[in-house]
Length: 117
Length: 111
Image: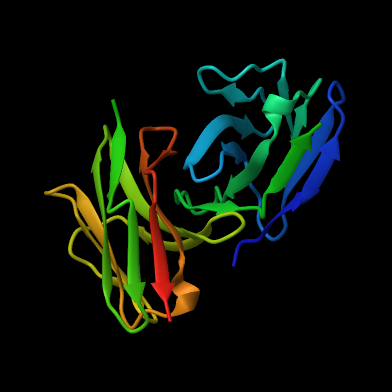
């Protein structure tokens, strides 16, 4: 089946630093990847849609200069949390959609727990 | 506004019980409905449903979609403690096929 990896799985950083999270589709090509944020006991909140070769589409209320997204290839998207603050602490999850089949199924990476001190 | 509503929000059952989880939706340009299971990490895919009345099965789990009444159910028979998780329903809608998520049903199966 479709496998998505995400790295790192957990990161602790100081306030003011930037953190990069990688999302890779391992056995399929993903023109479109998605970045979600999840708070404890809450559902998934879509932050942005990452499009290979073009700019990401951000959801309302998500600062694009704060959450930089780069989708450099058909198998890799990165999310950089710039100048992280404690309120950015959260569970960040990426997903990828297999475009060849035109199905809507998104396959998720294992997530990254970010703690900003 | 597009929305997906799941019920119940939480459920506690004993091993061996059968549970039915509900997902209703109101969206523009429906494409498909998906069920995911989320344990401690990210969601894992269970089913994608596009046509009414066709049951999808995987072991003790099954799901069906009613596009006329705009809902889907997820059934789990002979529940086990390993079924304890949050079950998420999402609907793909619109030309961009973005997923609209429900809040999930938290299922706890006690031994």
